[in-house]
Length: 182
Length: 206
Image (tube, rainbow over all chains, first blue to last red; front, side, top):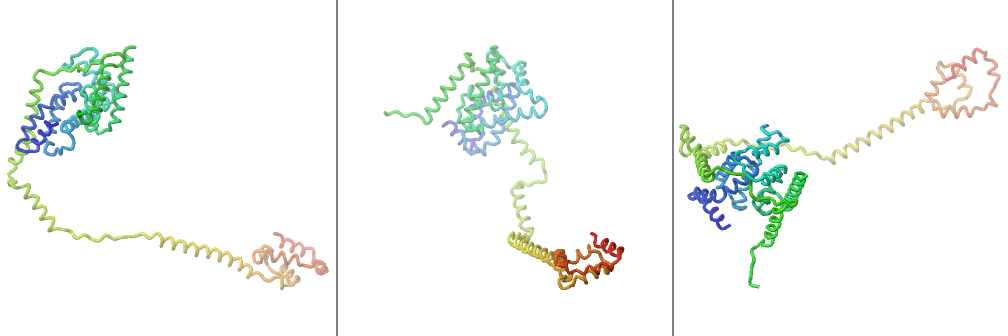
């Protein structure tokens, strides 16, 4: 938190803005990349979206008021970039509407930057069966260990709704694995 | 006790424990926390450079655009603002007062009520006057003798239906009831021929 305050102070000073942005990149780029990668699966798409996210952060930095934590603000921009990207794919017709899940599952199988155990891949396929928002909540809670309060700031949803969403996500994964066993 | 804990410590503890519990097992299966995704070597180092290069590109177009345009001055943006303000002040259009049309519901309601009352009154008076006219036009049969009625009925080129329209049916009925059949001189009828009686009967048949 203290480090974040220092970065914000440097950002607000036009002379040190560029230096503070480099600090920001070093601190957050990996977390943001993996957050995006979990949603879009493909490495090249995640790469583009991560760059777009930080360009938007750079452009909007002078207007950052400090109402929320810097990290939650950047996370929110990255989340919106992911959702807009997936929505654009559907609208352009490159992804059939009903087949968004199977399109990403195919990327999971065919992409060159996928390498994991059977159970890891199984879990990713199971997560892809969840609706987009629920997938976000599950990924942030399960893999990134984001607190519900931080998630509430990022997604603009109440803590109760997020807990409920996570609970239902786990239930759906349970039924997915139960079907796989049968 | 001389110990203190951070704010929200117990909440974060609870979240941490629950999340760990959920991450360990689903249907007896220990689920991984690792992702099956890989990245090219040196990706993050290149990512940082790519992003920094793009931030320069974002700033560059604005500067290069200004350099290309030969028509703008160095202080163009601030001068422009002043010019626009100066022009808007000199060309202020006087605002016209808008017509205010108020709709007074009460006044219209009162007027409508009065109009309805007038209409009802007129209808009632029209009805009464039409019946009065009928009554006025009709002869006062009580003052007319029975012989005169019969002569009138025989001689006048009107039917009994005409009389019924002109006179009050009730008055006729009353008059008819008052006819004293016992005093009626039947011999008068003997002087009439059968044809004349039949004609009379046809005329009074409704």
